[in-house]
Structures are given as structure tokens and as C-alpha cells.
Image (cartoon, rainbow, N blue to C red; front, side, top):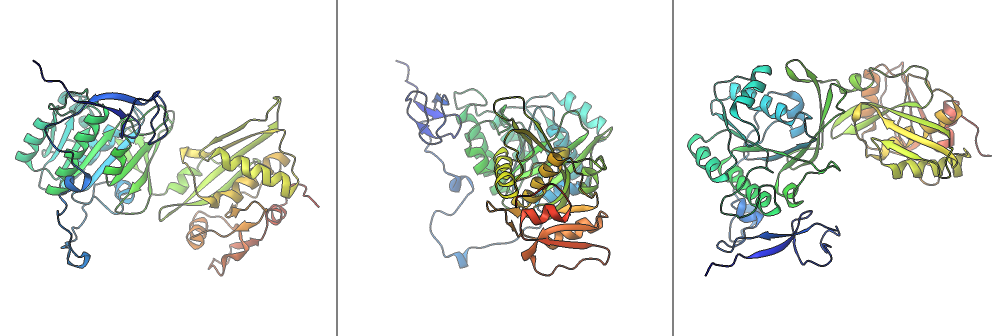
Length: 460
């Protein structure tokens, strides 16, 4: 009699075991994500601590042996910035992005530059392309280092066999959703396969010191495909983003155990990806002069100040419910600021359509953009352009007050560097050193900020 396979109901979204109850997962609250997967019964379950080779007995934190391993450069200043100063040996890094956005190009550049700079080889495992296809891309990118090794394989056992013989400095898997373990009777890309393959790669990284990079597919919503536990297992999660019709790409860290959450900016040229060290100049290069609804806001991406343009368009609505559309900022923030402008300032925006966009494809989630966004809406509604040499910094509260923000001096310094001559800032910022030709205008409320630049009519 054939041995019956052991199965379990598993959520494709969070990767947790569940019961099939109307297709609903009680762990993450998602519907229609429960699938039946064949699981292994020969081996005991392995946790993250076991995968990382952690000690099996408790020890005092002061007696834990530690030797700091120096980082090594990737060959790209922008990638090094996003990683926190370079590649940490033994790190486990996930790179996600839309199909065709440039993930394989980025990883090919990485493999070639590291192989040229260091003695040990770099192993690039492509489970989606043949070695000939990888060579065509490498020739186009001038990435033909002798120690840049390529293999087309999806079987994790064979990958591990070749890795042991080579002991590479960097191991690249393109992509994690297409590799599989042959002893697990599930299709590649399933929850069990992704989780177990990632666990094996995690053990390789932590036990051997090899830096492991994996490319990950994304869903139609832009999230990494597969179980959410994949993002918890890795040390760093990078998203490669950008508009397909533009030549610019942004590499953004959304998780990094070895540094701050930075961004890197690239331009796609004939030779692949080119670093853009001055992101502010790029983001403001096509800024319209004298147009209403355009405001420049200095934002912090990790430790890096970047000047971005926030554009707003307010127009009469021909629908029963006014539309609110955003690109690069949360739509809930837009709705909140419209309510503050109507209640505290007196601008009748409830019956107007409002569209907001952060140019160059960057996404902003810090509160320091509030004041600039509110002033862009008021500027568009009143059709009153702002001074093109003014930047706006501040958080807006529900009472219409302007609150302080962190790292103001870094933001002001970047603004001065880019040639701006005035900044609208919160009043409770303390003393900030500025150049003689630069003016700080401190404001307590949103009304004061609008009056300082001569926009609109205000509530008495």
C-alpha cells in the first residue's frame, strides 16, 4: 500500500498553517489565500535560529563572541549607500521589483564588479534564463569578468553542491520563486518551496560568510510574491522601482538590519545602470517655472536629504463625489490636509477634485511633506504660483498648527546647495545656521505660512 502523503492548509499570504474555513486566514485576515500543500514529515521543523546556526544553550550577552567583519564595496556607490556602506559578508538580501524593471541588470552589474575587484568568484544562478542569455546581457553591460561564474539551475541540491566546491564571495539567485527542493513534492513558487529554499540560503549565508542576493517576483499590488515570512528571514529588502517610460530607476530599502533606509538613484543608459549621486538635481531638472501648485520639499531618505517637487491640481468637480488621486503620497494624508485647509483656513475644497503627484517616481511617507503639500493645494486652488526659490518644511496638525521636523539643518543645507534662497519652516525649530543670502521664515500656523508667500484668502 502506498504511503499517504502528509498535507496541511497553509496561507499563501503569510505562510502560516491554518484551517480551511471559507478560505479565510485567521492570522493575516486575508480571504481566498488558503491552499493545501504537501509537507515533509521526515525532518523536524527548523526555525530561523537553527537556520542561522545559533547556539542551542543560553549564554550571557557579555560573553557572546563577536568579531566585526568589514564590508566590501559592490562597485556601485548608490548600491553601497542603500546597503548602509557596502556589502556585509554573510548577509541575506532580497531584491524585488516589477517584471522588466532592471533587477537582473542590477545583479549582473553587481556580480561583474565584485568579481573584478576581489579574488574569490561570484556565482550567478539563473533559474529563468540560459547561460547564453545571461552572456548576451553581460556583453551589453561590459560585465565579462573571468571570475563571474554563471549556471542555469533550479535544483537547490545541485546549487548547493556547486557552491561548496567554489565557495563564492557572493551568491546570486535569480529568482527565489523558481528554485525548488526536490524532496518537497510541491511546485516551485509554492509557500513551502519558497520558505524552505530561503531557509537553506539563509543557512548558507550565516554559516559560510557568503553574501546571498535573491531576486523576488512581485504581485500586481507591488508586494513581494510568496509568504510574508520571506521578508522577515532576510537581512535587507530592496525594491527597484521606476516608471517604464522614463530612464530613471530608484532602489529603495524598506528593511535593513545593517543601516538606515536609504534610496539610490540610477539612470538607464547604453551600458546599463549609471549611478546618479546628486538626486536632488535630477528630481528638479524638469520643474516648471511660474506654475501654480508646484512646491519643493526637502525630505530625508535615511541619512540623505533629497529635494523633491510636489505638484497639486485642484479643479471644479463634475461628479457627485469629488475625486482624490495621489501618486507618491498616501491618499489619506491628502484627505486630511484638505479637511484642515477647509476648516482652519477657509478654502472651500470639498466640492473640488484634487490630484497630487510627487515627481520622478519617488514615494514619501514622512510628515515633513505636510506643509508643502497643503501649500501646493492652496496655490493651485487660488492659481497663485509660489516663489521658485523657496522650499517648504513642516508637519501640519489637525488644528492647523505647524509642527517641527527632524534633521532640519541637513534639509536646509541641501536647499542652500541647490541654490534656493528661502525656507518656510516651523517656528519651534531653534537656531539653524544658514548662509547670508538665505532666509528662514518661521511660522506657527498654516495660515501664517500661506500669508508669508501671499497665497489665497483666509478665514477670519
